[in-house]
Length: 246
Ligand SMILES: Nc1ncnc2c1ncn2[C@@H]1O[C@H](COP(=O)(O)OP(=O)(O)OP(=O)(O)O)[C@@H](O)[C@H]1O
Image (tube, protein in one colour):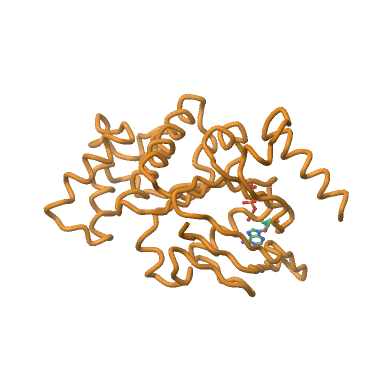
């Protein structure tokens, strides 16, 4: 199977006043093509930092990362992926349609194809009825869905999503989950961080678990959870075991 994400010995530190904090400590993992993989860990574990290294927003102190076989720091690697940040930043004075058309232009999608692509995505994320409203008037759930639509504008093979259902009500979460499931059914590779462990358990094939900047568990969800009641139970037990080893 083709490897689409490969992280090898990633280390990253942040300095605050004179204190150095190791946010990533020898982080290594792989994500195979077509898999939906949940990236889980407690607050401050290093999930966003790892995603930022993968996306080339942050240079690691050491280690390497590759996306779709290309160095993660290269612009080339980013042209074939879709990314939704934890707090999607949109130009709120634009309408959803204007925003997606601008994103399509940035990806060099030919003018003749843009309208069809934008309409298709607006339909997919159930925003077609609101396409001509300014993004400033959107609810949190709608913002997250327009964020997902922009991540899909280039029809990427790999999607990286940072807490896609964060702050959403149950209906909003269900809509995003449905979209992730549709993308999964179309064979996309999806790597996403989340604290919603029941969602991860429902949607993901595999999990990668990080704590204190170190990968502490990884593997197929069903295999890891085994006869435990659920992923949350497994997660809490793994954290306890890891703390006991420190
Ligand atoms: N820009 C920064 N400057 C200083 N420290 C940072 C910075 N970004 C992250 N950190 C620290 O690095 C560690 C990892 O943070 P990160 O945001 O990657 O965790 P996370 O797992 O995504 O957390 P959450 O689940 O709360 O979003 C934390 O201790 C955080 O305080």
